[in-house]
Amino acid sequence: MELKSACRMFLFPVQMLYYLVRASLASLLPSRRKDLSREVVLITGGGRGIGRHLAKEFAKQGARKVILWGRTEKCLKETAEEISVSGTECHYFLCDVANREEVYKQAKVVREKVGDVTILVNNAAVVHGKSLMDSDDDALLKSQHINTMGQFWTTKAFLPRMLELQHGHVVCINSILSQSAIPGAIDYCTSKASSLAFMESLTLGLLDCPGVGCTTVLPFHTNTEMFQGMRVRFPQLFPPLKPEVVAQRTVDAVRADKAFLYLPWTMHALVILKSFMPQVALEEIHKFTGSYTCMNTFKGRT
Image (cartoon, rainbow, N blue to C red):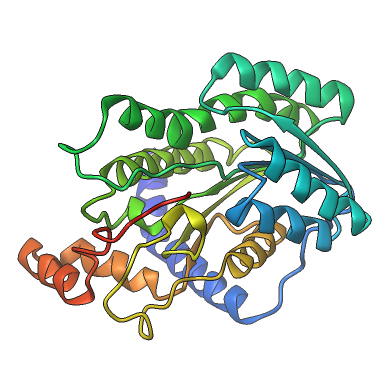
């Protein structure tokens, strides 16, 4: 037994080197993409912003059916009609993911009217853009319920059937702010950090579940209504991402079974810097880039 343990310890660094080399080669070479023609995709917050572009991109890349969940019927209806015109079957349902009972009820309706969901995209989110002391208690709770707890309810509603079918994918549209928080968005940063921990745990928990995978997307500031008014000091150096680019890269990551996607790739450097730089240096970086005050002009979705 001791000899076996010693052999495993010796082989461990060799295995790690092998996986690093394989991952590097995989990033350089074209990989086989998952066929979406059998997939039924449900997107929360699917009526506008990144969610709307995700719905269009999944339809464009061949998804069999697209389902939209959200709280604003006008936006959901417009998006559903646009996708239906393009030739993809699309349905929408009013659902507040913060309401557990409503999620479970609407999940049952979806299964009866549309069929089994095979790709769940947890995209719904809110941000209030205020400091802790300026935030209303109910607004703080709302952020946590939608951005974090909503994922618990939707995943619990649809994952069991994916495991039965041995076919499915859970996607989370997270944020780089989950790993590098900024002032003025304490509710959003906290909820996204919780959401990231949820996805990391879920991804590991599904390792022994054949046919079911996870993808977590961590984009930089994206040019949508939700973060309207947010300003960085050097927009030429740190331009906001286009929501259609985030959507396209997300669908590609799902098709490639990629577990974590940072957008742009330079966000990897930010995470690495945070792991060893002293706090005073990180504070100077925030001040230099303007992230320290970027929420001062925040307006949010109107």
